Image (cartoon, rainbow, N blue to C red):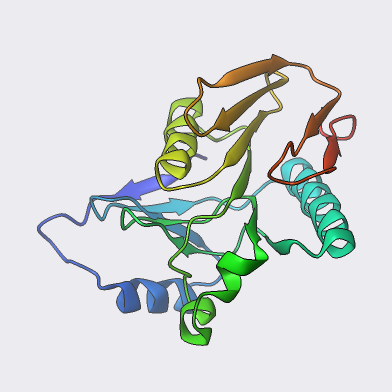
Length: 191
C-alpha cells in the first residue's frame, strides 16, 4: 500500500496546532504536510525496512553520544521546515547549538527547524520521485547533507548544499563528511 495524500485546499485550513493535535490523536499513523497544506498519511514501515531503520538510528546515536555534537531523531519526530511544511525524516540529526537555540515550547512540538542531516530509507511502497522531491526540499530549507538510501536499486543519493546530487551504486559505507565528522555508516546490513 502506498502513502495516501489528501488535498485539504478550500475545504479546511489546519493551523499548526490543529495539525499537531491531529497527529497526537492518531499516533499509530504518520503524517506529513506539504507547503500547499496537502496532508500525506504514510503507511507503517514493514519489518525489513523497520529493522534497517532502527540500525541506522542506532549507529547515528552511538556516534552522537561519543561526539556530543548534537541530537539524533527518529522517524516519529516532526519538524516544521522554514517553508511551512511538516516533515518526519526516517533519521535526522541537528547540531547542538541550533537545537538549544529553540525555546522549550518549540522543542516540545514540531520544532521549527530543518535538520542539518537527514536520512530517508526507501520502503518498497515509497515513490522515488516523491522521496527525491522531499530530499530537495530538505536542502532548500537548510539541510547540510542528506542521504536517500534506495535498497531496491542498491543506490544512495547524496544531497549537499549547492552541489549536484551524487549517486553511488552499491557503496559499502557512507561518510558524514564535515557535517558529522568521523561518522561512517556501514551499508552491509542495509543491502
